[in-house]
Image 1: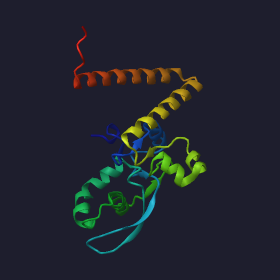
Image 2: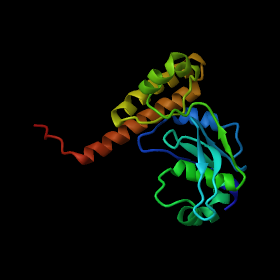
Image 3: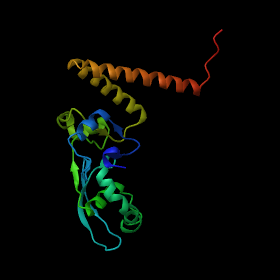
Image 4: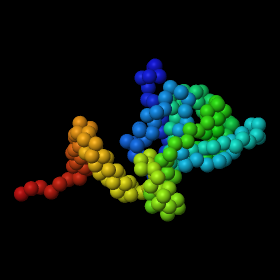
Length: 204
């Protein structure tokens, strides 16, 4: 299949990661998925381990909790080496999958492209740890990590209102109408699903 017909980006994140899709798409827009790119943030420093050569190499890796993106081209380059790297090169017992995948990309000549907005903790923890100045410096965060399902509802509700306000303030009525229609459609789709899950009382 031609690369232009494939998915452009592939995302890895934790199951307790909140993702703001609108913000993420805006962040990715300047990048070319036909180039080998590893994109993430809230990065740390670690060592690339090699169980065969016993050599180490320092590397900057994106936070796995906040999530990171492979371009279609990078995944194409990594795919032939992935099984061998995980099973033979990367030491057994290491659970640092974000570091391991970054190291595999590094062996192919690709370093992480660091982008703002990938938060490795929940909003309240980020605010307490980094302070208001850092927290509010990025008005369009991509992700938060360590977020409970209930917290995800509140965060998503906040950004839904913010998105509607922005579209209205910009006079972007076509996109606002499309968003409202999509929301209504998903609302009634969910109601139909829930109706199948539980039996409603008979109306007398």
